[in-house]
Length: 387
Ligand SMILES: [Zn+2]
Image (cartoon, rainbow, N blue to C red; front, side, top):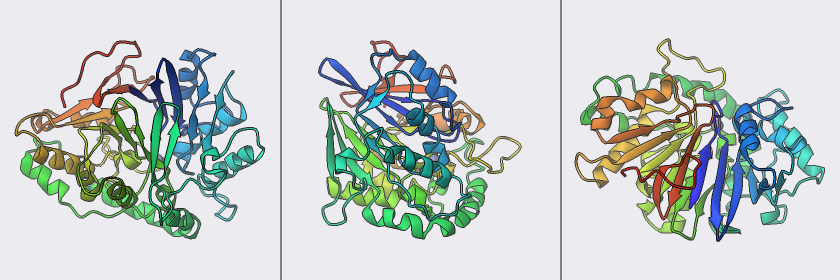
């Protein structure tokens, strides 16, 4: 079993992941979410408070990329760790000190780099200190943890090289892309029908060109019980597809759960990506906010994008039985931008939306032998959710 807790992390990611390794429970942390630099973000602090002090060893801590909504919460974790915290490895690809000093994310990335350089924590042990990246010649490498195998899908080596060169250009392009995002999907929630959905899914796709997102560490996690989870970070869809086609040789790669790349943005969920996968369960980590982005009065916002959800739904509807539920979205926040996916018209089209019972805890999803269900933190699952 793999158990994924998407902790409340506002517009970012903070995933507390546990799995059984024989009689032992192992764990890793993927990103720390946005937050203060001195104290743990509240969601992560509360999670540590619930964790017994003698069970705070992590097989791995991953900082997927340098953006603040993923990195910031890891700074206090590593500089002022909770009692008994330890990590056997920390994956982080550092940006060299050349970006504009005032750009969000770079300052934090430098601080994280300094902290890791101090030698107090292990750093990229899996690659003997080299970057965590997919080699162009050999394709996706595998890294065994105790009880779980990780296959690295992103970044490819070129994307890591591009991180510095494209930094400034990508930052400027971001505002333009977001404007397009907000315009999208205004008609998905007003009595949507299959035609609306198809039209949305067919809207032009503009690939995410933001270099920091492209540098995201994304991977498959495979458990011996057959469960397979894709942790998509904020990765570019093209990098994921390129890796998936190397791993599987074709489309329809069966995956139990996908952590949607880039909080469900329209620019990271391409038709090619959803076609490469066969997956009914998509976890979306966002409260809909995106830093300083403008919000409409009715609460509509960019994440997750209706186009991205429509692409997933259209692909899954085509593969399933007509009229049967085919897609479940798992949200770690109930907010105006996520709640709209509970619309009855979307339910009739086969979509299920699951929300936290307690917004302060986020959502816990368990994957056992490939079956996905809500986990309430007790040892017994509540029973499968229809797929
Ligand atoms: Zn992000």
